[in-house]
Length: 60
Image (cartoon, rainbow, N blue to C red; front, top):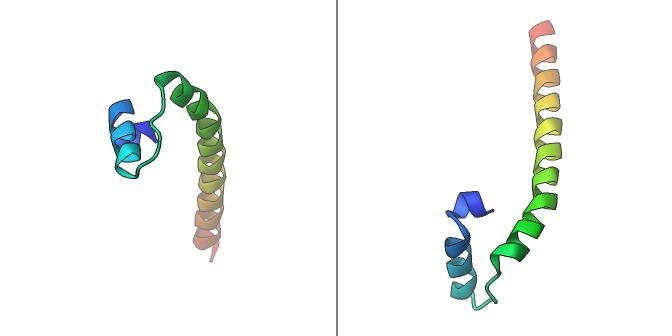
């Protein structure tokens, strides 16, 4: 989330624009860890499916 928005200050600007509470750097880092693990799992599964599809397309 932080990388795509451009850092903590941009995240907080976006949150304040939506009238939401801003977040501290410490709390953001704590939330990034599990989110990163989920993104890794999704990327791995997506790559596996794409490779499987590519193999099936080559065989037909």
